[in-house]
Each structure stands twice: as C-alpha cells, then as structure tokens.
Amino acid sequence: TQTVSQSDAHVTVFEGDSVELRCNYSYGGSIYLSWYIQHHGRGLQFLLKYYSGNPVVQGVNGFEAEFSKSDSSFHLRKASVHWSDSAVYFCAVKSNYQLIWGSGTKLIIKP
Amino acid sequence: EAGVTQSPRYAVLQEGQAVSFWCDPISGHDTLYWYQQPRDQGPQLLVYFRDEAVIDNSQLPSDRFSAVRPKGTNSTLKIQSAKQGDTATYLCASSLAPTGGTEVFFGKGTRLTVV
Image (cartoon, rainbow over all chains, first blue to last red; front, side, top):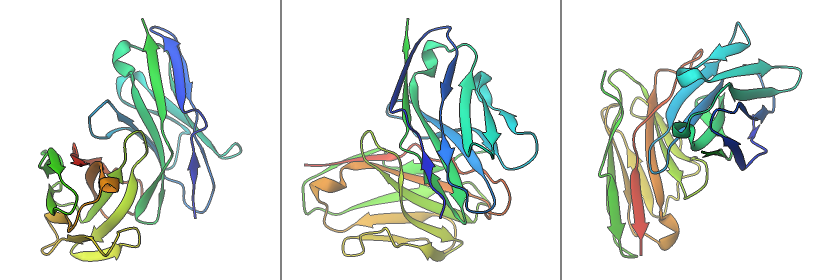
C-alpha cells in the first residue's frame, strides 16, 4: 500500500517569491507521482507527473517537481509565484488502478 | 478534445431525498472514477470502473450509494436517501488503462448540499 503525505496545510508567500510545496510518499512498487491544482470552487487540474527518467519534471505555468527516491519525496516548486497561483495543491501517488491523495496544501499569495 | 463532463453542477436536497449524478468521460478512456471531496479535504475514492466492470467499490456506502457504467462509457452515481454528511463535491475522473504513466482527468464536479 502506498501513502502520500503533505506536511504543510498552508503556505503563505508574497507575489514574486519562490515556493516549494512538500510531498512525501511511501514506496510500494512502481512509482507514479503527480501534482494537481484546485482553484476555489473548481475541479482538479493536472500540473505534472513523474513516472520514469529525468527526476526533474516540468509542468504548466512554470511549475516543476523533483523526484527523490532516497528522500521519498516529490516536492513542487515555482521560481516566482503569481496571484493566480493561489489554490490548493494536491500530491498523488498511483497505486494499481487508483490515485492515493495527500491532504492538500493551500497556497496563499500576498500582494 | 472534450474533457470529462459532469452534471448537474450543483444540487441542494433535503435529508431523505434521492439524487443522481451523471458523468461523461473522455472518449476512449476505459477507467472511470467517482470521488467524494468534502469541503477543505482531499478527494476520497468511492468507486472505480474498468469498462463496465466495478473494480473497487469498497468505499461506497452500499446501503445508500450506487454507481453504474452499463456500456463502459457514461456513468451514474446515485444517492438513495441523502444525509447531511453527504454534503461534498462529487468528482468524476477518467483515464486510459493504468499501465505506465497515464494521467487522470477530472470533471468540474457536482457540489451537493444536503440540508
């Protein structure tokens, strides 16, 4: 059984700052990790995924994430956030047919 | 390419009423998921299908919830007698057969309020 943990319920940064949202997983076989974004009142939108190959993966809107087997992590980063990045971010690991979800991190952008 | 389509977008019920949610997945996607997402929480899997077959419905409250996907395309999730605790957003998602790094696509969800 795979699990995923997002230790920060909230992260607050100023517009233009860099940000890292943390995700740790428990290893249980083949790794498929992804990040999704959910704006208030909206559905989940795919940001990026890692399955194999280059551990640094690029996603939409300047997001990237780095897979680390040694740390069991898949942290999401952005070099310079915009107010429109305010949302809840979910990390997920695929186990067999289904996605196992973290509890989400709410990113708050101050002007 | 059309995304995952859900209807209705919103529903408000009194306790004891029934409601059905409808989902049209992306064409060609054989795997379909229903999730329940309470406010300020992550999605929680209720049931998922591969084609028309139920793969896992262990988290579906079987006394009041049911889900079908009769032709392996569209799906309906039904709540027979709603309770206030069912208040949540219900998300449908679809993907190709889960081999390799396949992405899961989500609909916009149905926001259910039970009063």
